[in-house]
Length: 209
Length: 209
Image (cartoon, rainbow over all chains, first blue to last red; front, side):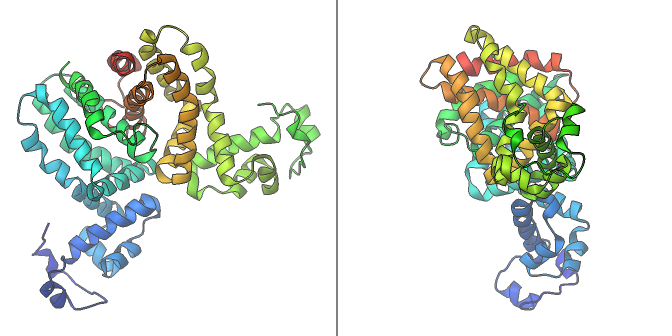
């Protein structure tokens, strides 16, 4: 999101004027707010996260956060959707082949997200917030339903497609929990190339078996 | 735990004296403290939970909580071990048959725990705390390693047994996340008898396939 039009909002930054920031190639205020929000939600969880701290991290006034994104729930939704953007952009291309190949594609895709710190941190933030707060869980639920479920289940074209997709996701979500959150050994340190061949056939079985 | 011997500690309750409580068949202080701790950790998570609130819920002084259980981390460990007790007591009997039957046994066992509110709430408390706090995650990690992994992996008797058990657990942990925590449909409302036949063969495949 470059948000050229939105940057005309009431920018009241404490530091350099907006024109200087733009000349230096600094991200526009809405982007800085989303980055700051993701950090705040990741570190403090949904309940403890504050708009004030998000604004401070972005170098803007709290009013500007509300101006661009609305309530705390709406800020969270925008931050989560931004974190999901790589995940949500790819499936269109990723799952265009035969459903018989989706098991390995989906498994590898999930590992690509979780193995890179820059995409793992937003996922951890979402997971932490969704587990501890009902509002955050509802946001996560809507995103899963609207994006992953509709796309994947639609492609399977079976009456029980949504349940199949969710059972496949359950295998991958649980693996992420034990590997990256609880960090129990040996699954926490096993190389992806050991885990993927064990997971992909199971994911495939849920989808089309 | 009936803790007859331990009840000789410095009982300083605000309410009725201990003798009256005993006559009424009320649980002893250590048991009341554990029940209160589980509620507190479930409702507020590990970080926000306070010894003071745990003591208040049990009708005892904070000093008594420390006397019986030590630090907050030790109170959490005791509360989690208590919540796991049904889970930890059963496997000895549950997994005594052929490993070829463990897939369905383990799957049904996990559903029994999560489908009953009285055992689901402590599990949710553990999950919430482990996801949001590293100390709680470490406690959970040790419990998994010492109990489930050693017992199940020992019974499988293969060099990769621990990884197999964890991949099987990942399927069940992820199912619990989507069904009971995120509550995404249709997996949240599907009857256990629809889910178990889809999960058990996958769990079995991880264990012995």
